[in-house]
Length: 153
Image (cartoon, rainbow, N blue to C red):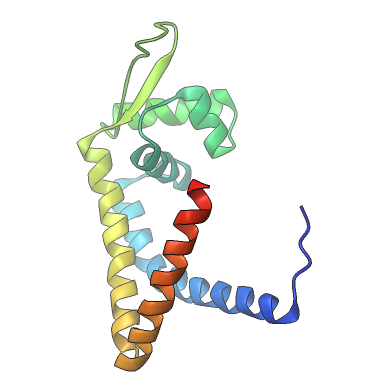
């Protein structure tokens, strides 16, 4: 779906994108440190985040979320199960299907990544002048409230 975007809206989108790029760039060293320590691939980290946010899923639903084949996802899941990051169990509605759940070890890894991003964000926010932080708070609070009404409608 194409949108007719005004020049001002395009500038807004670009500046938000630049802000996100700056934040991501500052977060990369900690992300890579956690990735290296845990010996997880980016698709494995993504799988853990998906299960953390969405809860138990079937392997086919996970494959769809990751954009991977069923075979590749099954292999990825097997590695995560063997390392203790995920557990598989029978689907209570259909024993032929398996449900994937994140373990406490998997949750710990995802929380470390969230904490790393929040540390960078905290440093970025605290560098802003207080009046700018106050205005940012007010605008973001209004935006979040608007999105909540849009997403529940």
